[in-house]
Structures are given as C-alpha cells and as structure tokens.
Image (cartoon, rainbow, N blue to C red; front, side):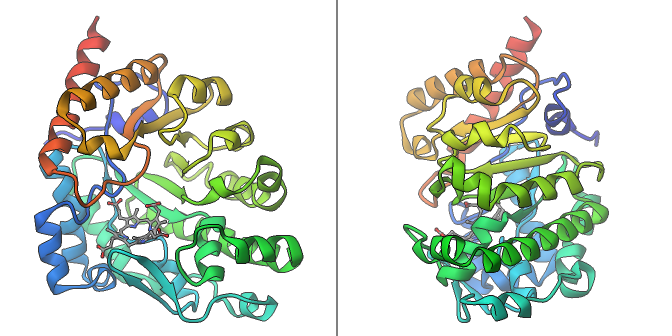
Amino acid sequence: MTFNDNFLRACRKEPVDHVPVWYMRQAGRYQPEYRKVREKYSLMEICELPEVCAEVTLLPVRQLNTDAAILFSDIMIPVKAMGIDVDIKGGYGPVIANPIKEAADVQRLRDLDPEADLPKTMDTIRILHRELNVPLIGFAGAPFTLASYMIEGGPSKNYYKTKQMMYAAPEVWNALMDKLGDMIITYMKAQVKAGAQAVQIFDSWIGSLSPSDYRRYVFPTMKKIFEALKGIGAPTIYFGINTGELLSVWKELPVDVIGVDWRVPLDSARARVGSDFALQGNLDPALLLAPWDVIERNAKEILDMGMAQPGYIFNLGHGVFPEVKGETLQKLTEFVHQYSSSKLKR
Ligand code: 1CP
C-alpha cells in the first residue's frame, strides 16, 4: 500500500492532492468498538497493552479514512511517570492524589526517561509505525495545561490555584515550567525516534491567560520547547482553545503548524499569524450533531478560507463528543477530500 503523506506535506506548506484531515479525539467513546474495549480495560490499562493500544489508534483511521493517526494515550501519562499520582476517571478527566503546592513538590518530580519509564508507549509507536500507511502524530500536553491539572488536582473552571502560584510564587512556577518543558522535549524526541512523524503540543487551557501573562509566564518555555524540536525531522503543531488573543504572541514561536479553535475564522487567524505557518482546524465540534446540510455549509466555508494558501489541515476546533455518529465523521472526511481535490484541480 502506498504511503499517504498529504498531512506531512500540508504541515510543510507543500502542495497536496487533497486537504488532509484528522480529528482530535478520533479514538473515543463515540465508537462502539472503543466502548467495547473500555468495558474490559481502563484508559491507563489500554496504554499498558501495546497491541490493544495500537488497535484503538488504528480503528478510526480505517473507519474514517483520515490522513493521520494520533497515538492513543493521554497527556497525563508521562506526568504519572514523573511521580504524580494520577488516575483518569472516565467521562471526567484526570484526578491527582498529591497536587503540587510548593517548591519541594516541584523538586521531587523525576526526569522522564521515555524508554525506561514508558516502554509500552514506545512499543505501541513502533507497532504503529509498521502498520500505518498514514503519518502517526505523537503528542504531549503543554506545560501550562499539565501544570493546571498538577496544581488544581483535576479539571478546573477558573484555574485560580494555578494562577495563584504563577503570580505569588513565580520562582516555583518557573521551576515547574522548566521541569515540564524538559520532559516534553525529551518525550517528543523519543516518540519521533520510535516512529512518530509529527508532534502536537496540546495547550487546551492556555486561553485562560491574557497575552501579557502568557508572554511573561509561559512563552519562554514554549519557545525553548519549539526551538529544541526544530531539528528533529518531524513537524510541530501547537493547539489550544480560546486562543484568539494569544495568536499575536504565538506567531513569534518557531512552530510549524498552529491549531485554531472555532471562535476565530481561519482568515482572521491567517491575518494574525502571517503566512509562515500552516493552519489546522477549526469546525465547531458541536456542529457534528447538526443536520448534514449545516455541517457541509460550515465545512465548505472553512475549506475555502483554509485553502487560500498552501499549508492547511482540516480538523475540529476541539475533540469529538461521545454523542457524535461515526457515519457523520466518515461523510465529513469524504466531503473534505472530494471538495478540496476538485478545487485544487481547477
Ligand atoms: O484520539 C485522540 O485524540 C488521542 C487520545 C487522547 C488525547 C490526544 C486522549 C485520550 N487524551 C488526549 C489528550 C488530552 N487529555 C488533553 C488535550 C486535548 C483536549 O483538550 O482534549 C486533555 C486536556 C486531556 C485530559 C483529559 N483526559 C480529559 C479532559 C478533562 C478536563 O479537564 O476537562 C479527559 C476527559 C480525559 C480522559 C480521556 N483521554 C482520552 C480519552 C479517549 C478520554 C475519555 C475517557 C475514557 O475513555 O474513559
């Protein structure tokens, strides 16, 4: 079978045959097959079983015909290996028994040695590298988003404990950002060495910061991460939610692809970041529950904006909801492929 590299070409702003598409949370509870695996194993257990984990990763690629696979894992998996006691509760999210409160808690965090600490994750990547005929996206959580769970102890609405540390104990905050930044660099390099062909850094909750706080408390670590990943031979993607006002700062980062949420039209995002980056996004995931004609109209509008210049990847503005039907995603993938290839031929 020939290798479909449209996704990698789009990351590099090279010409494509069709606009590549993948979906955040393309493996998940909307799939009956995934729910069946989850009846037997917890999310953490799946991550410890390379054959099962690879199968869960492959399933949506086969079913939906996406142009990329994303490793099935969670952003908290490496954090657990650093010594944080994490459990992932289905339908809720990560729960931490020993949240970070002070400098000593940060000092205690272990450095990550991916092959020694997460051998099953690395084995899963090696299996996928053999099996896939589309690129595999590796990933990590970004320092702010990881820190928010580590400090709050679980999902949060307003991140006040996180911000309290940031504002009141900047030296502790910076030490935490440093440790997480180094972990992410090491982990992403190891994933690429094992066979991941692109890496996405998920900063889901970063939109809770103002641009000036972002610049002061987070930007230096993000810059260090993307600089360190520049030469690894795999494109980098940076994604967050509610990031409209942060894009003017993100454009200073040496990243290849910028993920855009659904609140910012792609043409505005393009105007804010300039033409150096590829863009990825940004259908509102709630639209997947709308009638087909509404989905198609919105997808078309997004494609017309995204395709205005080379370097565009179709995706949602955030993850697939459990209520979505697999057939809807199948139909959407087919539409994106057909509409974009006919437009490219013209
Ligand atoms: O298919 C894929 O996208 C790959 C698998 C994947 C990824 C990329 C999972 C499996 N988690 C993640 C990353 C992740 N985990 C993020 C970044 C992306 C995002 O914003 O969605 C975040 C914030 C988490 C933390 C997390 N894990 C949450 C969110 C909680 C909150 O704060 O609101 C939840 C619900 C989880 C559990 C989880 N992780 C993955 C799945 C499929 C699930 C659902 C639970 C289950 O099946 O039991």
